[in-house]
Length: 420
Image 1: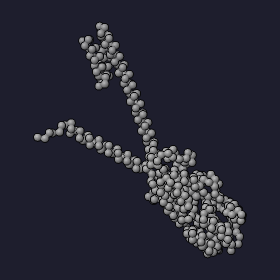
Image 2 (image 1 turned 90 degrees about the horizontal axis):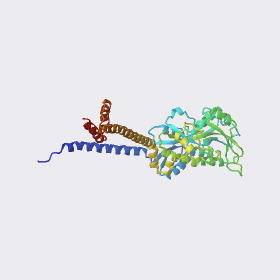
Image 3 (image 1 turned 45 degrees about the vertical axis):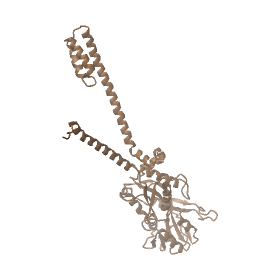
Image 4 (image 1 turned 60 degrees about the vertical axis):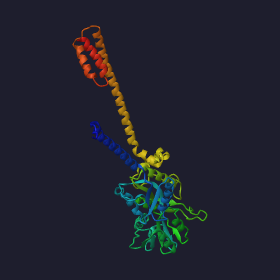
């Protein structure tokens, strides 16, 4: 006949299963926490058209982040106004992008600025066939080309032209991809072209070098900046492209848009710190119109600043991201506060336990001293009065716990044996 399992063994089996379940649940929770903290190894940046300044800046970030093992995918948009809409969308793969347009922050609650990175002028190139002008009203009735209609350039250019009553109703305005627009302007298909680009962008240097074109200087640049505050007045110094041949031949009054790098609020800090470092490397120096150390900044921004960008400007990269592997730094960053809270709770609990043990020791010591004094009184043959007997009863109730029982029982037993 098979041996029947004992009652203790039957009880032990479900307990063991419960323990295994608890351990498995704890390990699963830890695995999920680690997986959530580890930053992605690839991100997508929305840029303007290939060859434009957004694209070129994103390529600089791409090379910088690649050194840290992060793959950066570039997604070009001919309509650059749409980039921020993709960054704002929750499930869109594009989490970082550029803006230079006027924008309503209330429409983009999930998007934050990582900083302004540069000023980009609105270049107005006019054919030498046109008479000299210092206001855009000289373009009325002619042929003007600019990038796609939903681009920062076209938004600013149309606003500017409208102030001088230059509209599609009285002027031929064409929207072409930037490379095509530049080529068409140089062929003479249009009388003027308008582009917001970095002054050192290849498209701009090609147009500057074209002998059939000249830059238009805006006499009203300061006034226009007051009417459209997202544009700023700047001066492109004479000779800045070719000092020997004095190109341009005079200071050019211009309007400029401030370019911001923006990111969705939930981009992991491990990625943002690398990106902020790349932005600093790319834009901290001087350029034809930007002074050294002016950019990146959180002053000329179009959306609220990301809290991490503000922290980076004050303190730089935290030591965790500077010295630890990226995944480990992210883990520490994600759960440091929780860890500190647990340490404080454990230390507080330990202190409470130590304090409780101290109070327990003093309490026990007090009642044992009371019992010892009463026992000496019994040994000496003195009679115990009611108060002594009451103290013995109280001590019995106070001391009859497992850890105090033996010593107190011995004392109380001797007292009562002698008294009886």
